[in-house]
Amino acid sequence: MNKFIMWLRRKHPGTVVKLRDFVLKYCAMLGVMPLTATLGIRVLRADDMVEDLGVVSTHEVTDDFVEALVDTLQSSVAAFSTFKYHDSGTGTAAEDTTDSALETACGEARDTGTQTEGTTANIYKSVATHTYAATFSITEHGLFNDADVLMDRSVFAAVGVDSGDRIEFTYQLSCLSGG
Image (tube, rainbow, N blue to C red):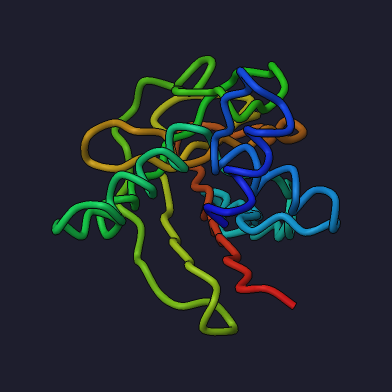
């Protein structure tokens, strides 16, 4: 890899090559996204009705999370176990890798997700259920760590909830190792 970067710098003097940018462009060229995520929702109504909405969003993680990943790989501290705090809101702006917060959080307490392995060893899964204390049209979800770093933000069609209704959020991050 270093030889390639040195060659690229010689061919294009003055060009600053960031390894992350190179990897993302190479993966995009191959049609592979190394970190992709899905968000599934089940609405648990106060009257015991259950609405399984299935996967409501498929997308990439945030730049802040990728930077935290790289920083953690360079340190002696394993900090990924703290990315388990679920929050929801009513914002409708499109997802973007530069997001660092929910657009419009509900303002209720975040829920701690149960962390498990998904259906395969390369899937991280966090599941949390939030009971709403007021009426909302929920349109966004975020997964945070204990330092308030946003790992991922999902935007989806409005899910109406009344006081006492619950939403079970199932966040899954797929980490691909290659071909």
